Image (cartoon, rainbow, N blue to C red):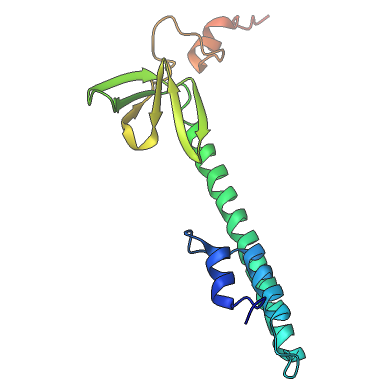
Length: 163
């Protein structure tokens, strides 16, 4: 029959080579089904409502999936921010050599976390070791922690004169 499009044809046009149906594809299929239904035996209300419910579920799942992906990326980015200021030892992908540098910033490139250290762009998977210089302690000479020890306080106080 001319002018009648089969569901298989619509599927082939809609899906193409991706082999995945999205909400727009689902709507196109539903419209094609309505246009091509048998006028003597139309789609029942229950069937139509069931398809609308499936469409709604599909859309909610896609939104949830996107939200989870965004949350995951935010979490990974927050974790990667901890690398800033740290020394990283990494494999340089182009040469295979192990190098080290201090991370200055973190970026997201195509959904992946990338560390910027000097003129290097480092994928997290290429990091072998992360280290930080230990902060100075009060025991080190020449370091003033801003707080006095008990002994230093006793030395600074004048003895009480008794009359």
